Image 1 (cartoon, rainbow, N blue to C red):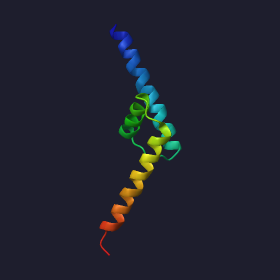
Image 2 (image 1 turned 180 degrees about the horizontal axis):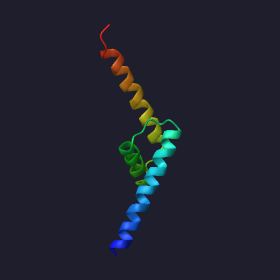
Image 3 (image 1 turned 180 degrees about the vertical axis):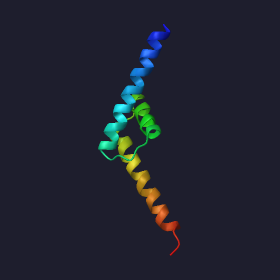
Image 4 (image 1 turned 90 degrees about the vertical axis):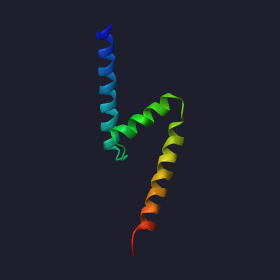
Length: 72
C-alpha cells in the first residue's frame, strides 16, 4: 500500500516537473507553486483559457501599479 502511494507521488512529481519545463519553454513566467495552483484549478473544472485570461489581466494590473508607484 505504501509502495503504491510512493509510486503515485513520484508520478505526480514527474508530471509537475515536465509541466514546469514546458512552462519554461513557453516563457509563461509561472513558478512551480503558481503552476501547481493552475493545474489544481483546471482539475477542479476551471476553464484553462479563462484562467489564462485572468492571469494575463492580473499581470497587466500589477505592471500598471508598479509604474504608478515608481517615483518620477
